[in-house]
Length: 119
Image (cartoon, rainbow, N blue to C red; front, side):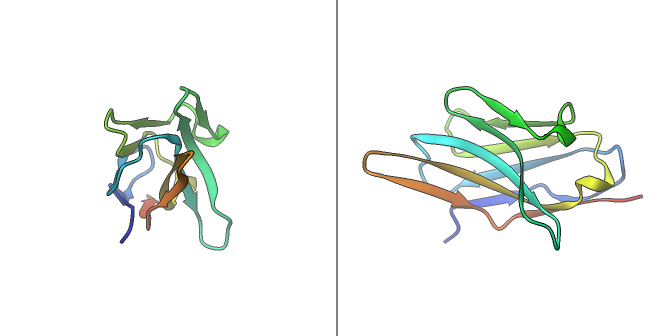
């Protein structure tokens, strides 16, 4: 079974907005980082946005000021608010949650949700 399930993708016009949601099917206690990645056909997967348990946030330059990553208090969901979307944002978006403790580590991935931005 998939540990993470993404939703919220779709087709929008440039300047539009989408909010992506990622829900974990199991516990993510002791997570280290929650992230969103995207992949364009023929290109390598790239990190878009992430936050860590110690309160740090990271965004690639292309999305700064337009995308916002958040998580809920249960630590089972990750969101990506995407505003002022551009055609260059078109990609398959995947979420990732990883972490662990002395008993072991986990690294959860979802199948992805497609975002298409076009006129």
